Length: 287
Image 1: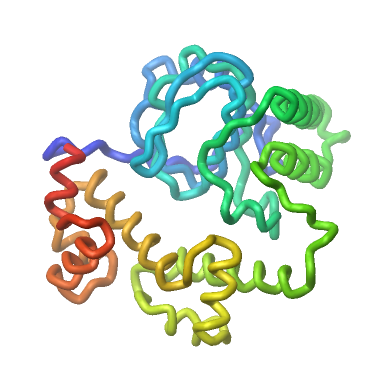
Image 2 (image 1 turned 45 degrees about the vertical axis):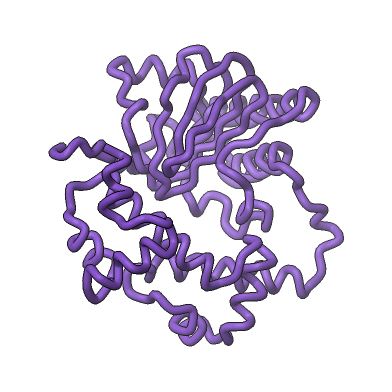
């Protein structure tokens, strides 16, 4: 692209033959084999989840402008819409699981605050790899013998794997009704932000649409994400702004229009307040 910006590949979930269940199990070796031109090292934006475990080796990864060092025991969770790239996975071995957003509907509250990358100790890594192997065996069985395929079983095994690997997985048996309600409110807010962030820049807009008051959204967001509803919304808009600035040739005014700002001055003021620098200056650091 012009101006030195890295183009983003938008990846759709296209399962391999025999993997039409909403989940696909592969590994780093298979990814390298199917990508001889190393396109994995370029920015990409999938519309599906990617969950990976590094069973051995070391490498590096980048997600939404943050670099991560991968070592034995690293877990990586790329959510739909993230811009990421596998900078160096030549020496990494371990499972990679791709799955549609709807494959684990209403998953665990821990998912809302789990990082992109974290580290498992030896015992937890062994258990997580065991869970991934079980999922892989069932997945291969489903591909070879469709009569034995069970999407619900695959979904449960994937949930078991992620729950085993998540950092600080909560004890759901002690969850309260109030806590569950708060999680539901936050999930609804988060989904609405994803859908309307280019149109609605005020928490009150979401509160009206969802039928809650602003304080309810703020309490639920703070409980789930550790920040208030306004800060959560602003950070999400900022992230989308950075994606546009870093990976497109849109002028700053075009980015402002794409994100629903009335004029470039409002956008510049917002970006400077959130990022500490004007958008044009921030873009210059990415070229």
